[in-house]
Length: 203
Figure 1 (cartoon, rainbow, N blue to C red):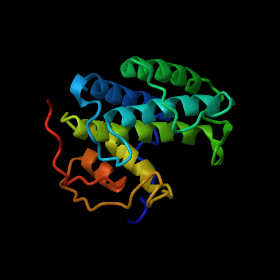
Figure 2 (figure 1 turned 135 degrees about the vertical axis):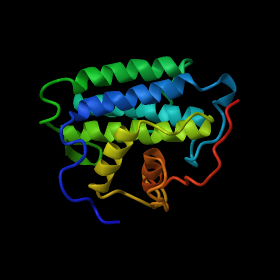
Figure 3 (figure 1 turned 90 degrees about the vertical axis):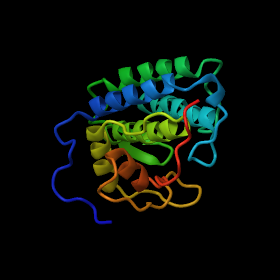
Figure 4 (figure 1 turned 60 degrees about the vertical axis):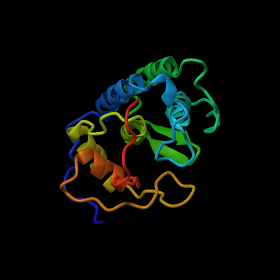
């Protein structure tokens, strides 16, 4: 697929606001996880629902370490403790506070993959929250038609990047998607999700 031309759809929006808006979406879905659903499978082969949420919370901690220039924790470490919802909100609040610093968007930070500009780090967390929000919704039988404007912004950002795709990499190969699909499904398909898979019913 060709990369888009012209200014990105989120050109007038602070990436930190995109991140916070996606965090609200993810938080609402997380609140909708029922007690018996934590061990249910997700569309991510390596994770059940608990593992998926742990990945997101672990990501909060990893990016917090990056922007505070501290050692980055292992990406496979279990960090949820006894209350996954509280773990998400606590780590998110800490990361949002650091992203709010004036020097973050214009700064450069050392990541495990090399130096990256701060504004790109913020957008990466925005992508993670929204795409994994779709994963969480589908795995738990919740409404996966996430905020269309956020999904279009996220898809635009992804299309402007060279994505690491393939087995063992962050993104699977792009899946087919028509313009008739909801923007959230088009985003998920671009990220390598099977949007034709029957969602799990809520229970």
